[in-house]
Amino acid sequence: MARVALVTGGMGGLGEAVCIKLAALGYQVVTTYSPGNTKSEAWLAEMEKLGYNFRAYSCDVADYDSAAACVAKVSAEIGPIDVLVNNAGITRDMTFKKMDKLNWDAVIGTNLDSVFNMTKPVCDGMVDRGWGRIINISSVNGQKGAFGQTNYSAAKAGMHGFTKALALEVARKGVTVNTISPGYIGTKMVMAIPQEVLDSKIIPQIPMARLGKPEEVAGLVAYLSSDEAAFLTGANIAINGGQHMS
Image 1: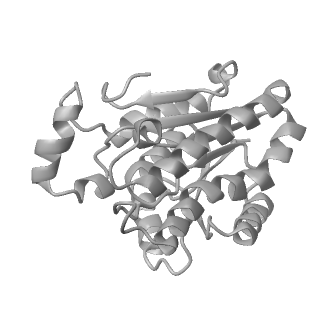
Image 2: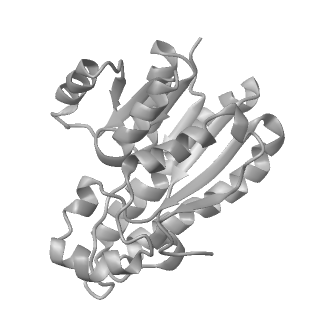
C-alpha cells in the first residue's frame, strides 16, 4: 500500500513541485487549500490531466481545530499520514516601524503556528507505527534575517527550533524531523518581485547567479521522505545557491 504524504499549501509554486515529485515516487499525495479558495477544483483537474491523482482538503493551517479536523478526515478517507511537509506560508513584508500586530500575527500563525497545528495530530501515529517523516520548509531568511521581514524571519527561524526539539523526542521511534531552508526560488511569490529588484538586489547575492528551481527543492524533499534518509534528523539543509553558508 502506498505511503500517504500530506503537503500543506501544495497548489502552486514549490508545493506543487513537491506534490508532483512525491507522486512520481509512488506516494499517495494529499494537499491542503485555504477555506474559500475557489481554484482548488481547477487545479485538481489540471493535475489529473497530467496524470496525477491528488486529493485536496480545505484547511486553515493557522487554526488548530481546522488542522486537526483536516488530518482526521484525511486519515479516515485516505489512510494514516506517513509524510508531512509543512510548506504553507505567507509574507506580509514591511519595516518593523510600520508593522502592526495584525500583520505580525498573520505571518506567525500561517508560517509557525501551522507547524504545531499540523504536526500535533500526525506525530503520535507515526511514532506508534515506527515510521514517519516530518519536513518543515523554512527559508534562508530564517537563517540570516532580511530587511522588512521581522515577522517572516522570526517564524522561519522558529520552525527550525521546533524541528530540533521534536527530532530529539522521536529519534528512537523511526520518525525523522528536518528543516529545508530554500533561498530565492523561481515561484510565483518570488517572481512577483519587480525584475529590476531581482536583477540589482537579489541575483547578485547568489553565487550561482540564478534563482533556484522548485524541482530542485522538491528533489530534496523526496530524499528526506525516503527510507534512505533514516539516519538524518534534526538537520537544517540549506539550498540557496551559495547565498548563505553556515
